[in-house]
Image (tube, rainbow, N blue to C red; front, side):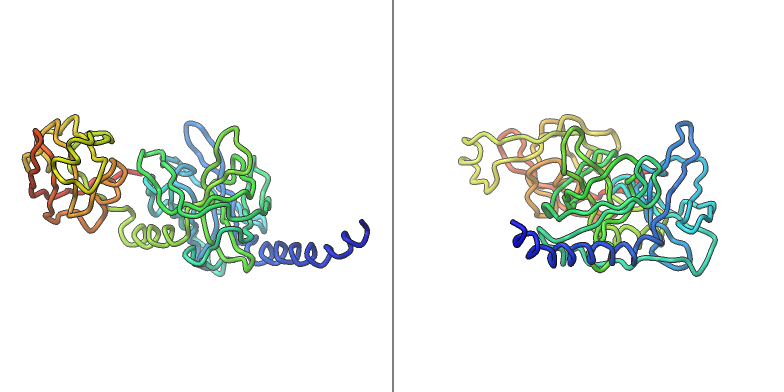
Length: 315
């Protein structure tokens, strides 16, 4: 028994050194965010540039009246909201300071299931708390508070608690691979982080515009399993679609001739197997661009031209 413990010591030492090394490189960039609002609260974030840009979760700062950031060295600085995107639960803040500690953003595309990850944050206000675990799964989807799905979410068993939201998930080199965002209530070891490649896409657009442009066509609908007979008779390659329950007056869908009861099969030539797939299609590159929407109406296929307009979620 003692020999087995002795043989395991080098592995335990290597694990410990990996965690402590990552923490040494990243901890000074992790901040505590205090929010002044009708219901005050706090969360986490991290500096990713030396001139004061901070990444956090949208739900930490959304509709905050005032924002104050506490650094590891004891400084407290006022923060300005640069941009907020509830659809991906990400927000960007700016501090009026320079030469600040900051972390390196990694590549979530290089993350592998089973690899070591470390979560840093301020759960329950306990500043710079560290937990470690592994990547449990990749490519998860998570519904944001706005109702849209966030794609390519990282699942981890590194423990998260209230206040961890917005903190970094880092690899063994201390590079950020995700932004910690959620846990499943009453579950153990099931936590989620928004992949850093998604984060970089969103942050660049928040820096440019302060918001994210997304398309709106003006329909309400739900997922529908297509009857087998319909699939067979129409020669369909898919078994699910979206049934439209309502069309907003004077909306792009109304202008295109879409009606309640239509079954949406394709958008811009891409099969639509559910409302979340349609949401993904209504991305920035479709705003203001005429495209096609294929539907089934009264057992026949029809194609309409439609131009999505911009919808903006206000901070």
